[in-house]
Length: 346
Picture: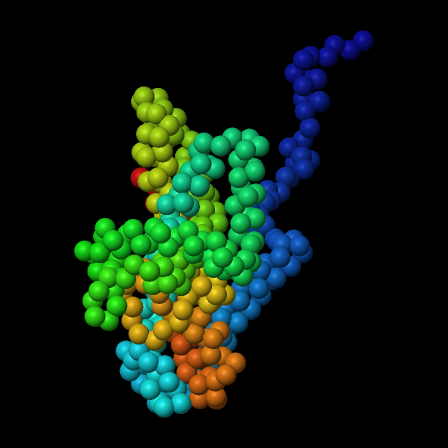
């Protein structure tokens, strides 16, 4: 048997370098191609956004076109005139706009503390089934029709608020807003002087906007970082101390955004306010006294009986309210978006 060295065996077993296959280096693309479902969803979402913006612009253009006749006659006095008599060419929204803002501010004074407390209760205190029940109850409250709130305000709330309003006017009459006086300056104490007031309408509207504000604030509070919560507890803080040091500062944007969203809703509330107030066309600084007005209630009251020029004047009032609520809602949306992104966290 021929002698075979290790070197010769190695040379025979080693393949020729020229016969080795050349591996081609291919780079994998990091750019993903969207699937058909992603394309459909993106197209539908983009179309829905365009339609929403188009509808909003169409509403503004429609109101501007229909209000042009009245605004051409009234001019800037439309914002300063208190009387409402379009047939005699004397009309303006100073009184009704003042009443609208007054009712909305009273509603915010009622709604914001309730919304903040309810949101903190749901997100920080309640657990398990109790939390789910509270969330459901708040959502159901948002589904109650406005006419139900109006009936409740007229037949139940008003009778119970009158003694409180009389007490406030008696002991806090040194504040001009809480006075209830006649034309000669004498204090009024009879119950009829306290009915259908801005206070009652504001309380009802405030209870109506609580669910909207609560949902926004609850979402902002629930996004407070768990690390900062545990750090506060580790430093010896109580639950309420942690809420004051972590949750409330982090949810500041949600509080502001929810408040402004509720304010936009309160400014445009119609049926409940229409059922409660006693319409007047003078600026009433006494919020406890009978008589106030709002833009939405004015439109609901005069729409069916107005002439073509009167309808143009109502459209002008609606245009002003539309612009005000638009600015408030856009501002609130931007604040809520910043809160969700964590920009308001301290």
